[in-house]
Image (cartoon, rainbow, N blue to C red; front, top):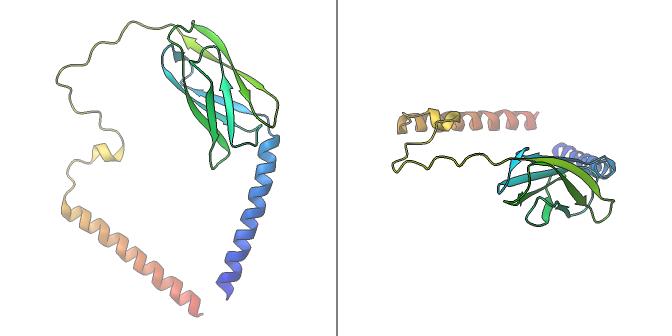
Length: 170
């Protein structure tokens, strides 16, 4: 009976904290992150808005974009969307206006840099990509290592189950 009481208390506490966080989130001053910044004309940019709004979607517009960008609310309260910078956007600072349905507009700036010379064309026989992270650095993985890892995970799960059952009995 005790685990049920603990889980119920935890769930209600999380719900109360979540509702309080949503209220605080709606009252905070918004911040907008544009990636990459500066952007190149004709490229895509990712927009992330934190705070200042409490709606399911938000609209971002700029004269440098090919059209309005709809930002959708994520699970953590951050609104995200992707826009495209016009190919003929002039280099320099541009304004992004955020329109929230239940709040006032907010303005932010981002930079468009001058287009650089065209990049060289790829070779007809490209090599393998860069090895980054653990996935790219492990080259000699075989079935013995995979089975050994699976056995370690199984032993850990069995040990955890045994400890939890002993605690429940006492």
